[in-house]
Length: 283
Ligand SMILES: Nc1ncnc2c1ncn2[C@@H]1O[C@H](COP(=O)(O)OP(=O)(O)OP(=O)(O)O)[C@@H](O)[C@H]1O
Ligand SMILES: [Mg+2]
Image 1 (cartoon, rainbow, N blue to C red):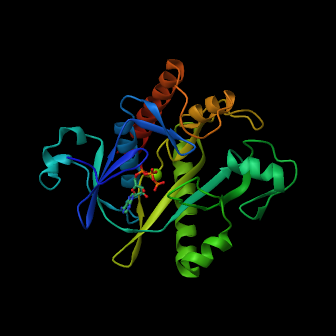
Image 2: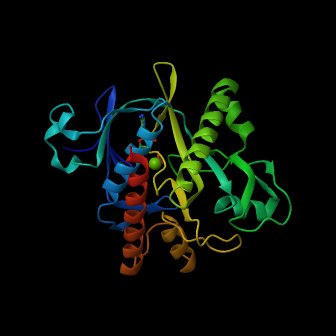
């Protein structure tokens, strides 16, 4: 059984009007896939995403089936899908990464240092790295098939998708970020930022891809958080920080990853999954 398309992290099987998204244990950073795998990462991404889709059940999403045994044949027989694949509605993808940021971090902080702005939004003077923003901001980026995704302004996205779709997507993104952030306070976690994707299915805009996973979001420990300091994170930032530290060029080939880094990522992903599932699935 061969995937139709290998994403960086997910293998995609095209079933004409549906897709199977199989989350693997691969890890990528700066759009490069590493040779090492993080054991059980695929299951964690799948479980976390499904739990959030469930929590946000009032927002239409692409999920059709989460139990692989109920996938159409022959896929129902593929045990590798256990707990790590979903059957989804195949959508016309809206080719933008819909990013919401509550804190000034990562590429946004770099842009702010250079220009005083993030995605065309002017921010006040003297903000520190990881500082909370006066209110969450919507900072879309393009999804490039080749090369790196590029941060763009609201205007640029609006010009391409049209005003109506833009406003809907922006509102949905900000709402989901804010509700998730509020929920996470219950378990002492701050949601720095997150990336959402949307698609069109039967003329409706729906949530696609993954939702609020540690690959697509930055999760911080509220207890140790301090603006101006590198936050303790339960997400892929651990890998990005390591790569910055060794001054990797961010172009292939990827450097080998030390076991300490692999173990740390694994530990933080497991911790986050356990905390999240407890919080999101409790009755
Ligand atoms: N319901 C859906 N309909 C159509 N495409 C989808 C749907 N859900 C997810 N996708 C796409 O499936 C792919 C999932 O694989 P993965 O995220 O590993 O790819 P990727 O390497 O990140 O590529 P990309 O940069 O395009 O996201 C992504 O391209 C994502 O946009
Ligand atoms: Mg992706």
